[in-house]
Length: 241
Image (cartoon, rainbow, N blue to C red; front, side, top):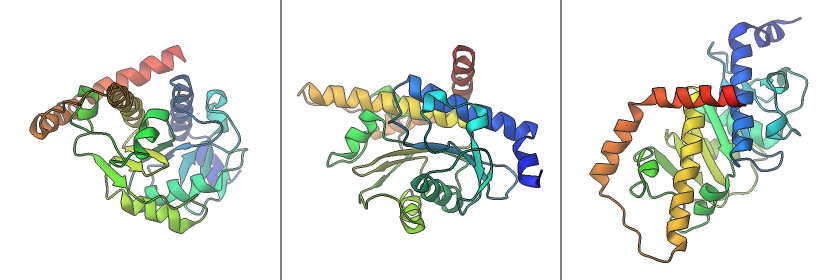
């Protein structure tokens, strides 16, 4: 057994694999997945550039900790029994490496992706209380450039994020990042809820009524100070899933 396999089985990495698998199953339950596509990843904390990723070919609802793979920045599988999907490797590797993000969740979840198809490309963070938590945290990649089949496209997406926690990718989907899995999943869930509310409000045909930016900024700061709520939500998911 080599050092990568030993690390894969260590208590810290085993817990990270378990948490990543839980986030994927929760996302499936909440309707955020799309077939066997889209991926969640978390970088190991040892500075090695290695990260954990869900594998190719499995539905999110069936993923368990032992299905998660460990790969390096070049996409080489270091530990785990499954293959990885190339677009996942290019996008996630670049965001970990260039944007410095620990946990990366990329989805084509319906309401958020619907907003990437509009001229505005993204959520209005002055509308609902849920949307205000993202005020000042969103970047927009306005150029769809096809599948991320090589490193250059992943790097282009990572640079377009400009360090933001949340990126709306034009005609594509979203990326949500955080320093830990529980925080990233909480943001992912509430981002979709916020996008759903905006799409529903827009579908009414009535004029929208956003709050002023100063209030949205205050609510964003208040939400950031309540991160224990994110952790409690994740533990509730652990109990129920």
